[in-house]
Every structure is written in structure tokens, then in C-alpha cells.
Image (tube, rainbow, N blue to C red; front, side):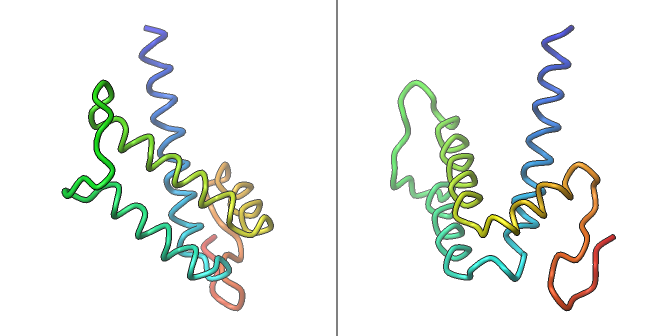
Amino acid sequence: MIAFWLKLKALWMARRYAWSLLRLFFDRRVPGTLKALTAVGALVIVSPVDLLGDIPILGALDDTLLLVALGWIFVRLCPPAVVEEHGMAAPAGRLKNVTPGGRSCA
């Protein structure tokens, strides 16, 4: 039963991380070239034409691991102040002043 709750918690954390990445991706303060390179990298990973090939033992799990690594690299290359703002807003479930001069999402 404990393993079930640990899996559920991991899925919940993955969902929160994915939403944080998505909000960070659509933030205007993140450079467009970084967004474009990340999008192209994600398309290469998930495309039906498997350019990278699969690791024999892992199967489709290697694509998932590559996407997680791509997300980690994307966050590391984003401006630290923007990442910190999104990281602090994620636990509250709302964002304040995400786009300068835009409407807040609160």
C-alpha cells in the first residue's frame, strides 16, 4: 500500500513539474532561441522517426528520460530570477505578475 502512495506522490510531483515547465516556456522573459531549441529537441525525441534510437532494455522509457533531461536543461538555461519566481509560485498554485505589463494570473 505504501508503494501505491509513493507512486501517486511521484505522479503528482511530475504533474506539478510539467505545469511549471509549461508556464516557464510561455513566459515572455525567457529567450525565444532557448524556447525554439527546446521545442525542436522535444520534437526530435517524440517524433515517429526515431533518430536517436532506443536503448534495448529501456524501450520507450528512454524517450521519457530524454524529455526529463531536456526539461532539466531548459530550466538550468532560463534566467534564474524567472525560474525562482515560477518555483515559488508553483506550491501556491497561482502566479503573480508572470508577464511584465500583462495581467496577473492570480
